[in-house]
Length: 164
Image (cartoon, rainbow, N blue to C red; front, side, top):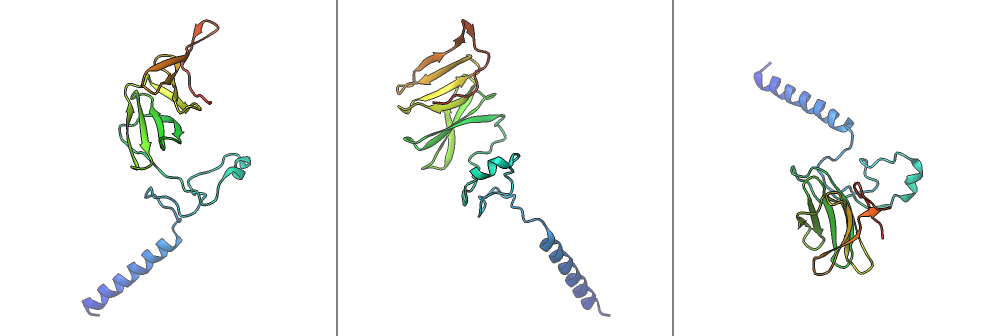
């Protein structure tokens, strides 16, 4: 046999094996792009009673990834400003994703190691601050009003989440 036919045979064999491997591989998309159909295979219900709350055709979108982010949580949607605010507790900052710009920026630094965030009916942000052991409301002018810092005369340990 000539060298050309061996190379061709080797190429075709490799292509057939690779094609079979791709055809039998799990259909997973690790690119971070939105799934084309909900439920996203990466979202798993640990309790089957939760399945009734899944909404069809609702993709999960990753808004923020950073090697500097240590522990983010406490997201809250502001319908007037059209943004999501969330906290990076150990880094002592609040971040904000603005819908119109589709990017995340630092919203408040320092944040008092805020954790739980929500908005009241007037659109003012309420945050639970681990560092200051209190629940505060940010007024329109940026000042803080302490809503609660004690229970039965004793200071809070680390307020966590808030709901209005």
